[in-house]
Length: 82
Ligand SMILES: [Zn+2]
Image 1: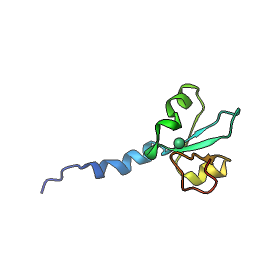
Image 2 (image 1 turned 30 degrees about the vertical axis):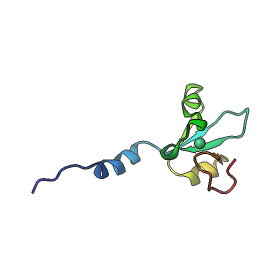
Image 3 (image 1 turned 180 degrees about the vertical axis):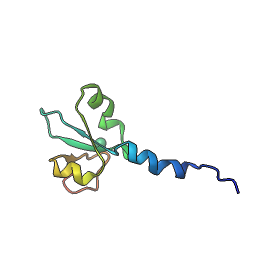
Image 4 (image 1 turned 180 degrees about the horizontal axis):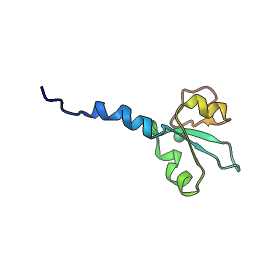
């Protein structure tokens, strides 16, 4: 029996390589963490990366523990989102 790789087979491995959450370490404003799987244009992920303020987190709990606040656009249901 031949096994055809499907997208579902690929995603978990990719998820291990690429952290899902991106924190914005810009000290001039509140440090937000974004969910890359639910990113919105308002998150301005590209400008965070461009400025070199991107910090990767595998879980949102890690980001919250580091003092990051959930982004209102991509993590609107998290407590304390702003
Ligand atoms: Zn966001």
